[in-house]
Length: 149
Image (cartoon, rainbow, N blue to C red):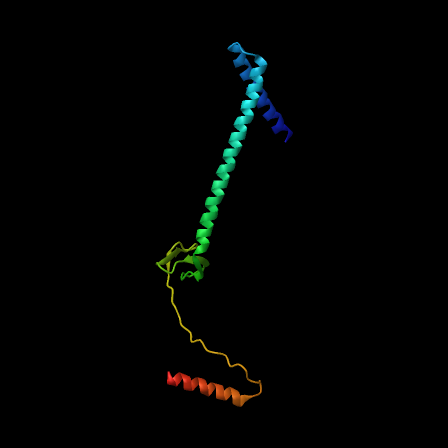
């Protein structure tokens, strides 16, 4: 740490002395050249630091946008049909064909999305736990409604 600080101070002094000698060569004040050299170095350092900060901010925004885009996909936990049965989480799109490359066997695997339906039923409510006759009557009512429609 101390070594780095000393090397940075030496660089500042050498560059400042070069500016001082340059100012002296064109018949200007030597000490004014040193002061100007130090100011120029700090200005360049500040501009460079600001540029790096802006670049890092833009890169982070870009990565965040890509991450949001990836999370917007729906995904499935799938298993490769090869002999190794490698499990992986793969993003899928419902409006296009879905493929992924297995990490282990390096083969392209297609994902088939299948839809299933289920009948929605109404729970039996407002009956006592031991009242079997009320439950039976409710079931009969439901069957009559289904046959009528």
